[in-house]
Each structure stands twice: as structure tokens, then as C-alpha cells.
Amino acid sequence: MCGIVGALLRSGSVTEGLIEGLSVLEYRGYDSAGVAVAREQGVEVCKRSGRLANLENALRESGFGASPAGIGHTRWATHGEPSDSNAHPHTGRSGRLAVVHNGIIENHVELKRELLSAGESFTSETDTEVLARMIDRHWVEEGDDEDALLRAVARVVPRLKGYYALALLATTPRGPVLVAVRQGPPLVVGVTEDGGFLSSDQLGVLPRTRDVVFLEDGDVARVGPGRLQVTDARGVEVVREATTIAWDPSDSGKGKYPHHMLKEIHEQPDVIARTAFDRIDLGAGDVRFEGGAFDDAFCRSIERVQILACGTALHAGQIARYLIEGLAGIPVDFDFASEFRYRQPRVVEGTLALAITQSGETADTLAATRLARELGARTTAICNVAGSTQVRESDAAILTHAGPEVGVASTKAFTAQVAAAILLAVRLARSRGALPEHKARELLEELRMIRPKVESLLTDAAIARCRAVARQHAGKRGFLFLGRGINFPVALEGALKLKEIAYVHAEGYAAGEMKHGPIALVDNDMAILVINAAGAVAEKTRANIEQTKARGGVMISVGSDDASHAIAAMSVPVPVTSEWLSPLLNSIPLQLVAYHIAEIRGCDIDKPRNLAKSVTVE
Ligand code: M6R
Figure 1: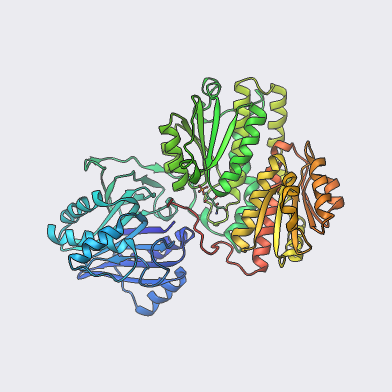
Figure 2: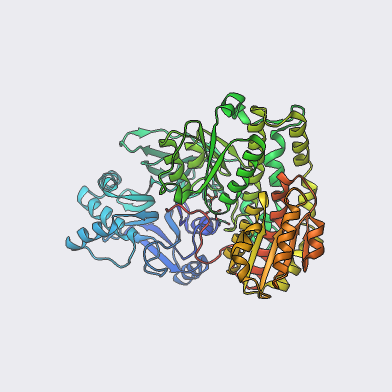
């Protein structure tokens, strides 16, 4: 949600690097983009509503000159419509300070009123401009150098309510200054001899250095070449250790694919293998997590699991519920993280709160997990980003090894989360004797062998089937996705993918629930995708296909149940696997169908309207 970059170089020009950083972060928001650079006499700003390309054109046309220090921003609008004036950076009245911001200043109206009555004026509707004006005024009162700026920041920060990550660029008599402030949303800093760099996301710093520091809440950091000085919430200078990031900067490119989403769909055989295979101990019919995490004693002490997540990650969580209850016999609840806090949840002794999140920075998931901890739960995370807030705050974490996911529509992170959930369920089950060794070995062997099956869904022939479904149905009024048991969440995920990237109304429904209402929607302008894997619920799901077909529904079957294909109008066959593993396979054709419908409808697949990849506001 909003991308921030900043750099202070020993020499050279910063603009190109800022744009490069923003292009990597554009997935966080793309309502507008802007940069500010430091000049001797003050800061110079260029900003435009719309995509980054608009800003690049404006920079070219204006002949924006070289400067060794600057900040940049790509916006997901929270206050004020996407427009040039609401775009960041925002400046103080002195013209020597610019601010970019991710988050929300909840008391900005009150602060703005105060500033207006003191004679301040504003050019935008944003909470960020209030901040910029306020810090600038205090800076003028405190002096004109870097220390005075830090004193101004220290006066303003305690007055702010809300969540924010800030980058401040200032021009002082001794040169430019770059300051970062974190209270909530992530901020990552990297320092080399050539420069100091900051970004909302490690991807923004990765092209400069792999050794990054994740700032903590309350931190104020001065960043420059060979220099990182951090003071914590108490104003005490602290050392924040650097983490070395394993990701390769080229992993965040599109490679040979037209879209990140398509590239990420194709990465799934590797991603599932990286996440699962090394953790499988076939000899013991068990799973081994790094550092002995989830040992027998810990697993046996778990009486109940509370899953907390949002969006796609919650669908992975719903699948995890089937797995943990079905294999380990532990009761599981799941909640939308955004709702958990508002239903007075009861957390019983022995509860493990399991947060599932790709980014590890989703504000709702973080807030829900914090509450679960306050109520006495131990916390764990299935997460894709090693140094993220979610991982750092959890008692234990299972990292998925999906690599950077840039497409706003989550694909490979989802299957990696499901793979991690399978491992966790097996470990829990084995620790308490709920799953005999030979049964566990059989399941893990099947998982170990799944790669060619995943690959078979990504061959030209398999993709052509999904494209044919897309072509045939792209114009339909609506879509229903039906599934039963562990494939019910797969149906929910299929519908979410289609909604978010193709802007088509789609609903995921439990197949057996259709007859209790939604079947009234069915006519021949409604496409109905039924996910049906050979196994315990296949026959019942087939009966639901017949009931829906009898009402004129256009049925498309996806899965390994051949009998379903025989009665459907179109089908996408999926290899047979254990029902427990079937979501890993069944979700892939649904991703491809959504992708191709979006393509046919001319949608912006990697940057769907109104969305942002990482939602760091509640
Ligand atoms: O980073 P997270 O996994 O916590 O993100 C959660 C959701 O915002 C995310 O899954 C969202 O629903 C995706 N756009 C779905 O494709």
C-alpha cells in the first residue's frame, strides 16, 4: 500500500534509481507517482496522477536535473482522489523539506485545523501534507540543520495517531539529509559506501544491496553513504542488525512472460518443491522444520488452532483447517483478520494463532495476531518474507519459498501456503500419533512426487484448455465456482482471482449449499466451474452438477473426477492425487482461466484497478 523509496548518494544522480525503485514497488499502489530531489536552494518536486509512466514523461519534458539525494512515492489513495495535487511528495512552506508517506494519520483533521488557525495553507486534501507542513514549521523554529530537523521530527511524532512510514528529504546548509520514520508499515534500509537507500519493501533496496535493516516501530533513522543511525521510540540510539536477503533481484522481473502473474503461475512447480521437499523426512514418515521448530512437545501442547488471514491467504487458511482437523484432529477456527478483533473472540488455553500472509505486512493480519497474543495465544506464521513484521513478531514461522510475488493477484504464494499447511498438518498429526507412520509416508511421498503433475497443468495443451474455457465464457454475466470439502476454499479462490483481475462478478460457493438459494441465479448466461477431485465427496458433488445443469447452468468441470467431465459442457482434467493435496493442482487451471478472461477483456492484469499488493492499512 503506497511504495516509498529514498536514496542519498555519495555522488551522481539519484533520479534514475528512484524511478527504478518505484517501478519495482508500483504493485503497492498505482494511483499516482512522484519524486523530490534536493537542490542547494531547496527541494524540487515532480509528481503526476496515474501510472509511473506519466511521471517518467513529465520528468523527461521538464528536464529534471541531477541530484545525489531524493525520495519517491507510488500511491494507493487513502485521503483525497488520485490527482496531481494529492500525489506525493508533499512539501513544507520553507521549500526545503519534502515528505512521502505510507499509511494513515488518523488525527490529521484536528492537526490541520490547528495549522490553519496558525496561518498555514494547503494545496492538497492529504494527511501527508499536514505532516510536511507541521514538521517544516517546527524545523524552522529549531534551526536549519540536520539536528534541528531531528528535533522537529521528535516534536511531531508523539502527536501523530495512526500508522505511518515516512521518508523525509531536506536541504540543509551542510547538504541533503534523508530521514526515515516507521510506526506501523514496513521500512527497509540498506547502506553501502556509495549510498544510503530506503524503501517500503526489500525489493526496492535489493538492486543496491542484499544486506538490509528492517526498521522497527518507533524508529527514526538517518540514512546516507556508509551511515545508518537509528534511534528507537524512547529516543535512544540503537543498532539494528542487518539481514541478508536470499532473493535475487532478477526474480522480481517478468522474464519471458507478458505479465508477472503468468510468470508466477509458471513458477509453481519450483515453488512447491522449494517450500516442501527439503522438509520431508520420508524415512520417518514425518516433517522436519528448520531449527527443530514444531517439535513434539510444542505440537502436543496445542489444543486449538486459530487461523487469521485475509484474501487469498485466508483461502489457504481454510484449506489448512481441513488439513489440520482431518489429519491431526485438532479443532481449528478461522477468521477474516479484519473481523477477528470485532467479535470479542475467546482464546482458550493451548491456542496457537496461525497467521497466513504472503507479505507479512498486512495490517489486518498483524493486528489480529497481536490481539490473539494479548489474549494468551502463542503465535506462528506461514509467510513468504523472511524479515517481515509478521515473522519477527511470531513465536515461530514457516517460511514459504515462493520468491518475490509481484503480481497483485496472488498465485504462487497461495500454492506455497497450501504446501506449508500440508507440512504443518502432518507434523501436528505425527507428534500426537493421529496419523500412523505408513499413512504419513504415503501422503508425503505423494507430495514429493507432485512436481510433474503440477508441470502437466502448465503445458501448452493444458493452457489451451483453460484458454478455450476463457474464450467461450469471457462474456458471461456471472460466474459461480463450486467445490466441496477441501476444494470448497479452492472455489472461493477461483472466484476471487476472476473478480480481482477480470472485474467479472463471481461467487465461490459450497457445492451442496447451491440448492439452498444461489441455484435461483442459474441460467444460460451464468458459467459454473465445479472443482471435483476423485475422492470422498466426488459423487455428492456430481449430484450438485446434475441439479445445476438441469436448471440450464453451463457447467465446466475442473479436477480429477472423470465422471464429472463426462456430464459437463467443458472440462479441464487434472491429474489424480491424494484428496488432501488436490488444492495444489486444482487451483492452477482456475488461475489460468482468470488470467485469460482478464486478457480477453483487456484488463490490466498485474495492476488491477483499485487494488494494491500489500495492504498496510486497516
Ligand atoms: O500479503 P498477504 O498475503 O497478507 O495479503 C493478503 C491479501 O491482501 C491478498 O491475498 C489479496 O487478497 C490478493 N490480492 C489476492 O490475490
